[in-house]
Length: 293
Image (cartoon, rainbow, N blue to C red; front, side):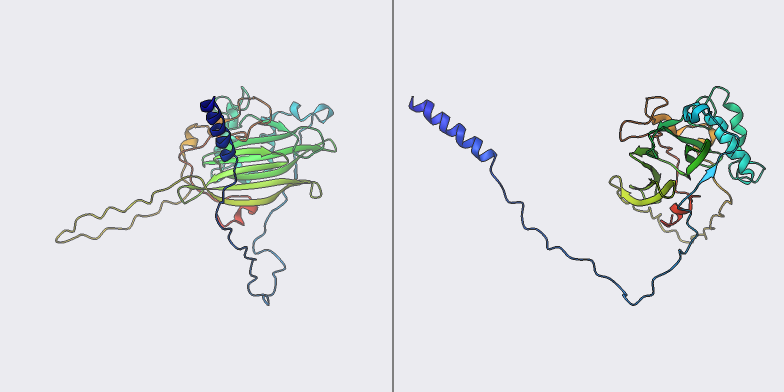
């Protein structure tokens, strides 16, 4: 009996120790932000013409009962090509190959060589009806166009547009989040646009530069000195954009949400694949230009 009592006491003491409080150390003193140059005159206008709101009515596209699921995504992209010939038509158009590859969309978006990715449907505007989130590759560059459409007054309206080199796209609540590669290894840009009921559009709301993983700096190799080193000519920069692997048909959407035709239910979001050859490129959306990319 004495041994049993001792065992019970030891067990009770162990339970008590497991739930005890332990100090986590001292807390750093909070420091309030310091305002610099209080006499500096505030700017009244932006330095660049930011396009925080991008609204455009799509001509020639309708659907019975304003059912956006009845809209042909390929037809929507064709309408954009027709509305912006300087971007898509002609030998000097930056996205000329996208217009040419639309001929490969006979089987529908996301199939074969069609540059249009499969569509996603989710209520982003808060009216209880699905909206269309659409993506398509901008060949011959490594960029991807991301668009959001909704019906207003029996008209199909584009309420969001962004062109960028894309790692992944996510939908979260009333927001579109685009992850893009950075010029520094181990980092990425994460830009958010959120629905604004006053502007009736997705507006630029956040731009983050985030660390995504460790990066060990590489040490440059120094060749052994020679008696008479010859001068090394500087490389001549090649003008124009460099096509990535995407221009040969690679599809960064291979990691998309398996639920076809529906909005993503997980944090991975649609088009979560990446292009290993993607590099930081200029963002045609002026909102992304604000981040200095």
